[in-house]
Length: 343
Image 1: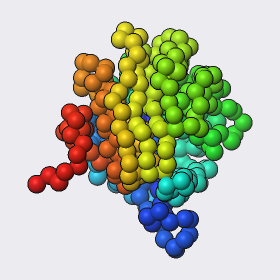
Image 2: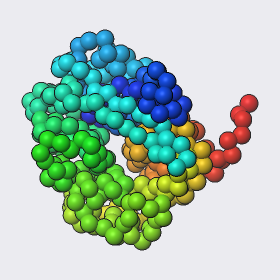
Image 3: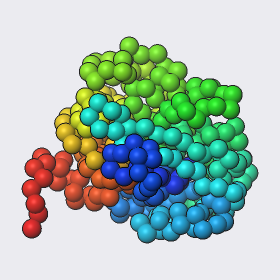
C-alpha cells in the first residue's frame, strides 16, 4: 500500500484553447485534475510512494482518469468504482487584467454520493504515513462532508499524520451547511494546516485584519494570523500560509510563511512570476512540495523554501499537475532561476 495518500475528487478538466473565452472556438482541451489528485501526482513525481483514494464510475471516463493517475505512478488500488459520473470543471484562462474563470459541473459526481462506511479505512491506512485532504470535498454534499470527517478521524486512529489545505470554494457550498460549520470540526484532526488568507477567514471563520482583494501584503498580519490558527486548534503542529500578490493574471508575487509550535514563525524567499502559463493547481503544488519537504528535511525553513520553489515552477506548466522533479526544485532553491537552456 502507498505511504502517502490523498483523498478527494479527480475531475475532467475542459479548458479553452490558449487564452480564448468560452466557446470562442468550438474546442476544449481535455485533461484531468483536482486538488487532491494533483497532490498525489506531485508526490509520486518527487519519488514518494503515493496513492489516491476516491470514487469513480465504472465507465470509460472513469477508467481514463485512473489510467492518467497510473501513468504518473500513483497507486489507484483503493479507488472505489461506484456512481454515475465524473465531475467536470471548465476553465477559461485569463490574461493581463482579465481574470481566469472556473465553472463547476460536479453535482451528483461519484464521490459526492459516497457516505461514511463506503471505504475500508483500516485497509487503506495499513502501512500509510500521511494523509492529505482539502476543504473542497466536504463542500460537495452533506454525505461527502460526513465521509471526509470519518476519513480524518480514522487516519488519526491509525497513527497517520494528516495535512489539510483549507481550500475555500464559495461556488460549492450549496447544500445548507457553511464552510466553518464543517471545516472547524474536520480541522480538529489535522496536524499540518495549509491555506491562503481567504481560506483561513472563509473556511474557518477566523477574523483577521488582512485584505484579500489587494495585491499588497503585510507579513506582520500573517504572523498574527498563523498564531491565531494554532491557538484555536491545539492539536495542529504546523500552519503554512501562501502569500500571493496578484498584480494581474500574468504577473504574481509568490511567497509563503510557516509557523510551527517549536520553531515559531518563518518567511520564505519571494519570487516575482512575470509570465504565468497556468496558475490553476498552484496551491496544490505548494501543498505537495511542503509535504515532501517536511519529510525530507530536518529544517522547517528548508521545507518551506522547497514548497515555495516547487509551486513557483508550477506556474510555468500547463495543466493541473506539477510535472517537476526534486532536482529541479532544489536547483531553484539554490538560486538558479535564470531559465537558461540546459544542453
